[in-house]
Amino acid sequence: MSAITIYHNPACGTSRNTLGLIRNSGEEPTVIEYLKTPPDRARLTKLLADAGLSVRDVLREKGTPYTELGLDDPKWTDEQLLDFIELHPILINRPIVVTPLGTRLCRPSEAVLDILPQSQRGAFNKEDGEPVIDAEGRRV
Image (cartoon, rainbow, N blue to C red; front, side, top):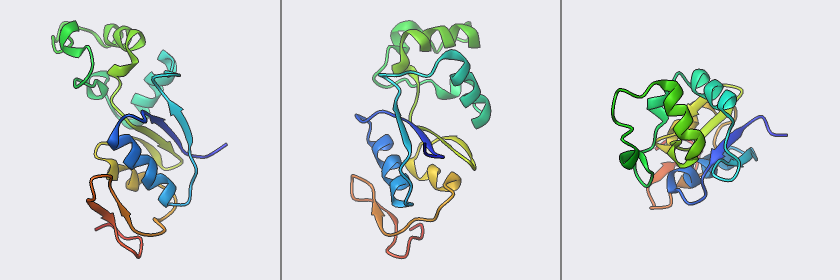
């Protein structure tokens, strides 16, 4: 079992770029496709606490029922927001990465570099071609 876990959505470019950066460090993470296997409430609560995030910090608006559910209304408690997330895991912003150095919501994807135990092993460009890591494994 890997020391790194990514809560991943393969349809998300940021998530794919983050996974690529993890692999570019020589690690093969445990990949949890959270839409197929969502974290249970206790696990999600722990992920948020470990990352120093509130429930609202992790809510995704784009491509989700966020607006239809009126989740921007401050009347919703954290417990109620967690209820919505349990019903609609797409509301979880992604990717969330757990390593021995910490837990982070990796938006932008380069945020993962701060918690990877191993250095980058070579050049890495995002899917859109934007360079992130040079040939010597350094941030651009």
